[in-house]
Image (tube, each protein chain N blue to C red):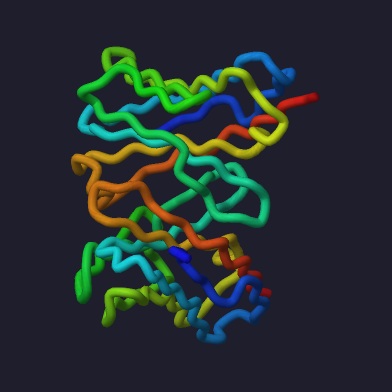
Length: 114
Length: 111
């Protein structure tokens, strides 16, 4: 059973507009959530994270929102840029961030068109 | 430069021929992990290690072995590779509680 779900395999957005990537999880024990970005031929790179004690974390153009009651998180990118085109993975852990077992979603491929 | 180094980057082998993919990190991280990425399945954890001589199974450990004799190295061993192990493999490391740093991947093809 998939514990972390990214239901949109792909998303296309115009440059300058907002990109919203969604992630749902089923395990209520998850207490730390992360987003990773992956370019072709490279490993994933960490983008932004959020602890379950918060509902929002912002870093420049990137904001992650967490809705614990809905077991849902989203990544907002504003404004979107062509260099943001990549695959985005949502990940979750239930070890207070110790990442004993970090569970990843299947990824969403974002295309930002000039 | 802080990095996770995997070797080789590409490997083509035949069924049953033992192979090892090496992983080394220069950041003194306690935690290391192996993932495989397959189309439509995302990243799935194979094995992880919380520290030297401490390893645990992830979600898809069958057909793989690991060892952690030194802090910096975490090799992935396929004793008898099969075609269903054709995949893109990533090694990662971190301090406990910090985000993972990933290597650039090893693309393995088993014929």
